[in-house]
Amino acid sequence: MKSSKNTTPVAYAIRLLKSRDYTETEIRAKLDSRKYGGDIIIKTVDKLKELGFINDRRYLENYIEFRLDSTDDSVSMMKYKLLEKGVKNDIIEELFNKINNPEQVDAGKIKKIIAKKVKSGPVIEKNRVKLYNYLISKGFDEDLAEKSVNEISR
Image 1 (spheres, rainbow, N blue to C red):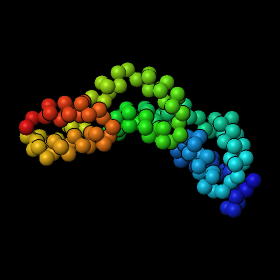
Image 2: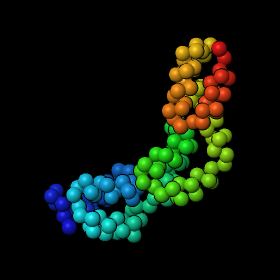
Image 3: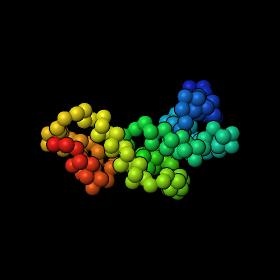
Image 4: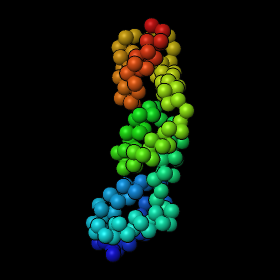
Protein backbone atom coordinates (compact mmCIF):
# COMPACT_ATOMS: atom_id res chain seq x y z
CA MET A 1 0.00 0.00 0.00
CA LYS A 2 3.04 2.25 -0.14
CA SER A 3 4.50 3.92 -3.20
CA SER A 4 8.15 4.11 -4.07
CA LYS A 5 8.44 7.20 -1.88
CA ASN A 6 7.46 5.29 1.32
CA THR A 7 4.38 7.41 1.97
CA THR A 8 0.97 5.91 2.49
CA PRO A 9 -1.58 7.20 0.00
CA VAL A 10 -3.77 8.59 2.77
CA ALA A 11 -0.83 10.47 4.31
CA TYR A 12 0.17 11.81 0.90
CA ALA A 13 -3.38 13.01 0.17
CA ILE A 14 -3.76 14.61 3.59
CA ARG A 15 -0.45 16.41 3.08
CA LEU A 16 -1.81 17.80 -0.20
CA LEU A 17 -5.10 18.80 1.41
CA LYS A 18 -3.33 20.74 4.17
CA SER A 19 -2.39 23.45 1.70
CA ARG A 20 -5.67 23.71 -0.22
CA ASP A 21 -8.88 21.88 -1.13
CA TYR A 22 -8.90 19.44 -4.02
CA THR A 23 -11.79 17.83 -5.85
CA GLU A 24 -12.18 14.08 -5.72
CA THR A 25 -11.00 13.87 -9.34
CA GLU A 26 -7.91 15.94 -8.61
CA ILE A 27 -6.95 13.72 -5.66
CA ARG A 28 -7.44 10.61 -7.81
CA ALA A 29 -5.14 12.09 -10.46
CA LYS A 30 -2.50 13.01 -7.86
CA LEU A 31 -2.57 9.49 -6.41
CA ASP A 32 -2.44 7.99 -9.89
CA SER A 33 0.60 10.12 -10.74
CA ARG A 34 2.30 8.56 -7.72
CA LYS A 35 1.64 5.11 -9.25
CA TYR A 36 -0.73 3.88 -6.57
CA GLY A 37 -2.94 1.05 -7.86
CA GLY A 38 -6.61 1.49 -8.77
CA ASP A 39 -7.95 -0.36 -5.71
CA ILE A 40 -5.69 1.61 -3.40
CA ILE A 41 -6.86 4.88 -4.95
CA ILE A 42 -10.52 3.90 -4.54
CA LYS A 43 -10.02 2.89 -0.90
CA THR A 44 -8.00 6.04 -0.18
CA VAL A 45 -10.58 8.37 -1.72
CA ASP A 46 -13.40 6.58 0.11
CA LYS A 47 -11.51 6.96 3.40
CA LEU A 48 -10.83 10.65 2.75
CA LYS A 49 -14.50 11.25 1.93
CA GLU A 50 -15.57 9.37 5.06
CA LEU A 51 -13.25 11.53 7.17
CA GLY A 52 -14.56 14.69 5.50
CA PHE A 53 -11.26 15.64 3.86
CA ILE A 54 -12.74 15.49 0.35
CA ASN A 55 -16.10 17.09 -0.32
CA ASP A 56 -16.82 18.35 -3.82
CA ARG A 57 -19.87 20.33 -2.64
CA ARG A 58 -17.81 22.20 -0.03
CA TYR A 59 -15.04 22.72 -2.59
CA LEU A 60 -17.57 24.20 -5.02
CA GLU A 61 -19.16 26.49 -2.41
CA ASN A 62 -15.74 27.87 -1.47
CA TYR A 63 -14.72 28.17 -5.11
CA ILE A 64 -17.84 30.14 -6.04
CA GLU A 65 -17.61 32.44 -3.03
CA PHE A 66 -13.97 33.24 -3.71
CA ARG A 67 -14.12 33.46 -7.51
CA LEU A 68 -17.22 35.64 -7.73
CA ASP A 69 -15.39 38.46 -5.99
CA SER A 70 -11.76 37.91 -6.84
CA THR A 71 -11.46 36.94 -10.51
CA ASP A 72 -12.42 38.36 -13.87
CA ASP A 73 -14.00 35.04 -14.92
CA SER A 74 -17.65 35.02 -15.98
CA VAL A 75 -20.14 32.66 -14.38
CA SER A 76 -19.99 30.39 -17.45
CA MET A 77 -16.17 30.33 -17.34
CA MET A 78 -16.26 29.33 -13.67
CA LYS A 79 -18.63 26.47 -14.54
CA TYR A 80 -16.32 25.33 -17.31
CA LYS A 81 -13.27 25.37 -15.03
CA LEU A 82 -15.13 23.34 -12.42
CA LEU A 83 -16.09 20.73 -15.02
CA GLU A 84 -12.39 20.53 -15.93
CA LYS A 85 -11.61 19.89 -12.27
CA GLY A 86 -13.98 16.93 -12.32
CA VAL A 87 -16.86 18.36 -10.31
CA LYS A 88 -20.13 16.74 -11.34
CA ASN A 89 -22.37 18.92 -13.50
CA ASP A 90 -25.45 18.37 -11.31
CA ILE A 91 -23.64 19.79 -8.25
CA ILE A 92 -22.37 22.73 -10.33
CA GLU A 93 -25.83 23.55 -11.66
CA GLU A 94 -27.47 23.16 -8.25
CA LEU A 95 -25.11 25.60 -6.55
CA PHE A 96 -24.92 28.09 -9.43
CA ASN A 97 -28.73 28.16 -9.57
CA LYS A 98 -28.59 29.73 -6.10
CA ILE A 99 -26.92 32.80 -7.63
CA ASN A 100 -29.56 35.44 -8.20
CA ASN A 101 -29.44 36.67 -11.78
CA PRO A 102 -26.06 35.46 -13.11
CA GLU A 103 -26.36 37.89 -16.04
CA GLN A 104 -26.40 40.76 -13.57
CA VAL A 105 -23.36 39.28 -11.82
CA ASP A 106 -21.54 39.15 -15.17
CA ALA A 107 -22.57 42.73 -16.01
CA GLY A 108 -21.18 43.91 -12.67
CA LYS A 109 -17.93 42.05 -13.27
CA ILE A 110 -17.62 43.62 -16.72
CA LYS A 111 -18.06 47.09 -15.22
CA LYS A 112 -15.27 46.37 -12.72
CA ILE A 113 -13.00 45.06 -15.46
CA ILE A 114 -13.63 48.10 -17.64
CA ALA A 115 -13.00 50.45 -14.71
CA LYS A 116 -9.74 48.64 -14.02
CA LYS A 117 -8.57 48.52 -17.65
CA VAL A 118 -9.76 51.96 -18.77
CA LYS A 119 -8.28 54.67 -16.60
CA SER A 120 -9.81 57.84 -18.06
CA GLY A 121 -10.38 59.76 -21.23
CA PRO A 122 -11.31 58.54 -24.66
CA VAL A 123 -10.59 54.98 -25.69
CA ILE A 124 -9.16 54.35 -29.14
CA GLU A 125 -10.69 51.64 -31.30
CA LYS A 126 -7.67 49.34 -30.96
CA ASN A 127 -8.09 49.29 -27.18
CA ARG A 128 -11.83 48.66 -27.53
CA VAL A 129 -11.09 45.56 -29.59
CA LYS A 130 -8.52 44.40 -27.04
CA LEU A 131 -10.98 44.92 -24.19
CA TYR A 132 -13.75 43.11 -26.08
CA ASN A 133 -11.43 40.17 -26.80
CA TYR A 134 -10.36 40.06 -23.16
CA LEU A 135 -13.98 39.89 -22.01
CA ILE A 136 -14.73 37.10 -24.48
CA SER A 137 -11.66 35.19 -23.30
CA LYS A 138 -13.07 35.34 -19.77
CA GLY A 139 -16.29 33.67 -20.93
CA PHE A 140 -18.61 36.65 -21.07
CA ASP A 141 -21.54 36.71 -23.48
CA GLU A 142 -20.57 38.37 -26.77
CA ASP A 143 -23.60 40.68 -26.84
CA LEU A 144 -23.06 41.80 -23.24
CA ALA A 145 -19.34 42.38 -23.89
CA GLU A 146 -20.04 44.35 -27.07
CA LYS A 147 -22.72 46.47 -25.42
CA SER A 148 -20.47 47.22 -22.44
CA VAL A 149 -17.47 48.14 -24.59
CA ASN A 150 -19.62 50.38 -26.81
CA GLU A 151 -20.81 52.30 -23.74
CA ILE A 152 -17.25 53.51 -23.05
CA SER A 153 -16.67 57.11 -24.14
CA ARG A 154 -14.85 57.40 -27.44
